[in-house]
Amino acid sequence: MKARMSRKFFCLLLTVVMVCTLLPIIALAAEPSGSIENAGITHAGGYLKNAVSVELKDVTFAESVAVKLYSGDTLLTTATLQGVNPGSYGFLTCCIATETADEYWALTPWTPKDDVVPDKAVLFVDGHEQDTKTFTLDTDEWAALPGTAFPYSGSIERAGMTHDNGVLKNAVSVDLKNVNFESSVRVQLYSDETLLTTATLNTDKLGAGSYPYLTCCIATETADEYWSLTPWTPKDDVVPNKVVLFVDDNEMDTMEFTLDAAEWKALPGTVLPSSNVTNGTTSNNDKLDNVPQTGDTSNFVLWIALLFVSGGAAIGATVVSGKKKYNR
Image (cartoon, rainbow, N blue to C red):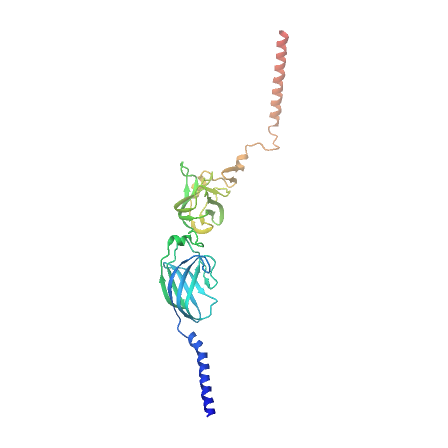
């Protein structure tokens, strides 16, 4: 009797042990699941960050949880859960920070821009897409959120020569389009791989903002008041053929172009290859040929002759003056 009861007890105990052992395995083997409850902007304070926060519900995972953030069809960043053990969770908050990433949610590199407003989140659990949520953020609140950046942009429309007509200058003029900047706009002028000069927009004349069109004037003579130039020598035989645009120190566009070599050579301000020009001041060795050089004695005799003639005239004038006094 005792042996029979002991056997039953042992079987029951074995069953309990097996159930306790298998439960976590069954939980881990459960199908991945989860949904998106809501999404919105949060502001730094307490345990919150400046972020797009996505509330997740009934998440069960064995390997991974990821949330992809979109603006329209453009993927902005992917947040991946880290430091949390696999299992089932009634609620999880995905923090997609605009500044320093949250310790539990690693982000792929991204630049939160003022004018690119997130509007969609997609949840993936163990690599399987589980849910999609579209939402609307206040554009002004998003632009003001710390960590969002000014939307620098710009492109090169065309480049060519212009001639002085009272409004334009003798220059390489570069037409820029849709330029948005916060700190700087620069255009580098090249001849093949040789950097000739860099034009920088004078922000005291034209402040930060958005401009549908801008013309960068790279003058061959006196620099334009809106575009300061690094020192350069526009030479007849070095023809510009490439420009590169930088906005807020970010390279935005490159354009190659072809100028007429004869027209470039004839452009006022361009000089012979032997010349040296800095900010419109020309020093040409060819122009020094008519200047007497140190050590040149060809005119020495003439100078001596002039000296004697002038001396003789002075003596004659003195004698005449003396005679007049004597006659008186």
